[in-house]
Length: 363
Image 1 (cartoon, helix red, strand yellow):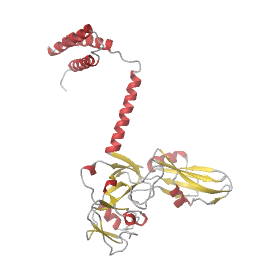
Image 2 (tube, rainbow, N blue to C red):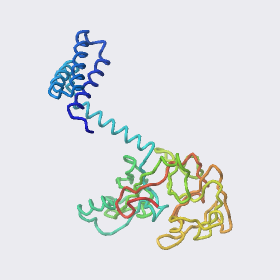
Image 3 (tube, rainbow, N blue to C red):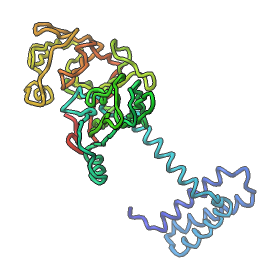
């Protein structure tokens, strides 16, 4: 850091000139190679003598010789921009593959810890465009207003996914169709829109607000070095898990739940409590659910696993038991069993959007 600027500049130029000689030795004439060697040595000696005027003069000569035999291509700026973009893409892919991967929470199985997509039906018109923009940025909220143009019937609701994060639905009717920024499940559950529904001309099919699911970063790295812990909010693949339908386009879905049982743990549910190895589950996440203070409701009995208060289940050595914080509305390990160890993706780390109400570290 204390080296003079002209010395640094001269040393860098020497390295580039020597690199040029190595790369183009087969195309440069013997006299040109000799000129390079003489000029490199002259610059190196002036730098060694700390003769600044002489060093600057020799630097200029070597620079002129260098650019003469390696002129900058006419499209240098274009190439540089492409290189920057490619490097950025490679870095982003590397980070996504090995360190942090973004995911969107689609369902309400972890509410209110993490929000899925929530519909808010309304009879009121949408607010002005400025308020819509602010609410979209801060809350991840958008508004829909679907009004039938004809007396008609909904035949089909076809999901359409754009850029992984944006889910639309195509309402296919006999005489008309609509593209709605909302998944089919939200339209059915929150807006009572389903195949077979009759609609009359001028009738509102769906109107109101839709809050997008929380967008989270998942830490894909730490589980390579430390074992998962009970209480982690973790993401896993559903490959090979019975009863979970595979999307014909995107393949088996990813789920996000709270890790409630490690290999060898003995579990029991006696609503609203979860017991791990004979003791009430410990940790902020578990205690918050078991408090049953609204909007939390505690843990509910399952269907196939933990279906009775006195039923115990021991997690196999190659699996993990996953439970949703919204236990009464969560399709989790109580229905289909443990998550295979090879299905683990990583730990839910951070909600990066929307900015309210869950922005920040996931607990």
